[in-house]
Structure formats: C-alpha cells, structure tokens
Length: 309
Image (cartoon, rainbow, N blue to C red; front, top):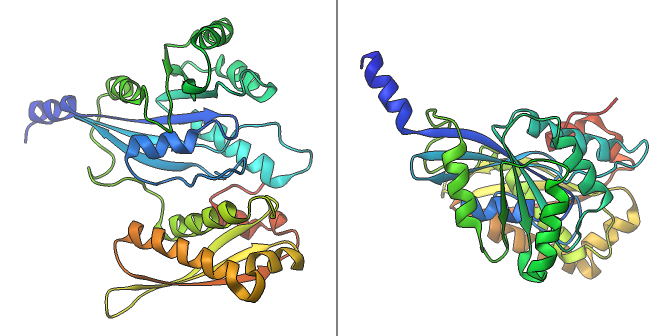
C-alpha cells in the first residue's frame, strides 16, 4: 500500500481519549458503562468506588473513543495516602486526554469539590464539555441556572444534559465525541470494551458485590486482589481472590454468620465474572486482616495507583 492509500485509510477513522471527570458519585462509571455498552466500571452506593483510571472502549461509526473513567475528584483528607493517590490518578487521566468531560450531578449542584474541578479546567486547552447528569430529577429552570453559573467560570465547547442511568441525551453526547476525536487509526480491536487486565476486572466485580451488600456496615478501607487464575482442562477458570480488611471485626462482617455473607458475595461475583470471561468460573474467596493496608506500596501496585511518598 502506498502513502496515499495509507493516508486515505487514516482519514476514514477517528480515535482518541476522553477523560470523564467529576466529583464522587456524579455518575462517571454509569456513563462509561452505558457508552461502551458493557460493564467496565463497578457501580455502588459508596462514594469513591472507582479507585484507579478504568478505560472503556466505545464505538460510533468510524470513531473509537477510549473513555477514561477516573476516580472522583475531592478534597483528600490530610495525610491519607489512598485519597491523594486517587485524586492524582484522576488528574493524570485529564493530562493525556483529547477531550475532557466535566460531569456534574445536578442534585448536588456546585459543591466545593465541583467548583474546584471546574476552576482547574480553566488551565486546559483541550476541548472541554460540560455534562449535567440526573436531569430527570431537577426542574428545567434550575438546570439552566446551573449551566449559566458554570459557564460563567469556564467557557465550555459544548453543554449536554443527560440521565446516564436512563440513557436520556447520551446518544447526542456520544455522536459529538465521535466527531471531536482526532483522525487516527483505532488503538484497539473493534470488539474490545476495555484494556484492563481480566484479573483486575474480576477483583473489581467482587469488590462491587461486597459494597452492594455491606456498604452500610463496612468502611471504605477494603480491597480485593486476584491471587490465582488457572484455566482448567474443561475450559472453565479457577480463580482465587483475597479480600483485605483492616480489623478482625471487619473480617467477621464479610464472612457473616456461618459464612453465609461471603457465600452470597461469592455467588453473585462468580456470575458477573463468568459473564465477563465468557466461561464457567470457580471462585474461591479468602479474607485476610492486614492493618493499615492503605499504607502498603504493594496494594497500590495491585490497584494500578502510584504510591504517594
């Protein structure tokens, strides 16, 4: 193929990175899952569920968009390594993006964290779009007032009003991003939905089930790691995962009376993991107490985060 043919091929396709930024629980993971058409990010009631940058791959015609679902941006607690690592990861996703999406939960409005994010975006020359989420919960007059308040601070390239949960307005958002990403060959095969290792995805799915079942009883400081992954002769997969907690009392909560809670978590996680890998899964969960695991550099490497010194 000569250079003219190559240039013609490149011009037919578009590809770029889209960083989805916002405060905790703004709906970033829900939006990422919707646009990719697959569950690439876990979603729970707990704030700051997403801890590292999760990349989901969305397709629209000849355009491929790599959606970077970032941790929620908030004011980190003083001397809290995990908080600082997550916020650093979020802004790291913004630096490498071709498009910046500022997602705002209209129910929360302009909180201190949201205002801080919006003001920080003034320093970026990358195309920026404002996306108001959960618009079905707020009167239109309030939405227009919120748009004016935000655009008085930053001149966004475009404004979209959506409901990520119900899918309202998301087709227009996806179409705009598809046209806005730069001309480029695709970075990933057309049928891929994420570039995250399956071991990581499996651990995240189990962590989701723990939070969904125990979000009122357990604190935020819990993590899950896939310690072993073996393919069996019958085509199924045997997976071992370790759930790290900080205190013995938390271990009892995860196990439950006569082990009933962890059995239910294992069953629910196994079903989701099996759907993700497309084969039968044998899942074995272990709970370990490791005090101050959030100060262990190895745990950060497993989560895909830089360890703050």
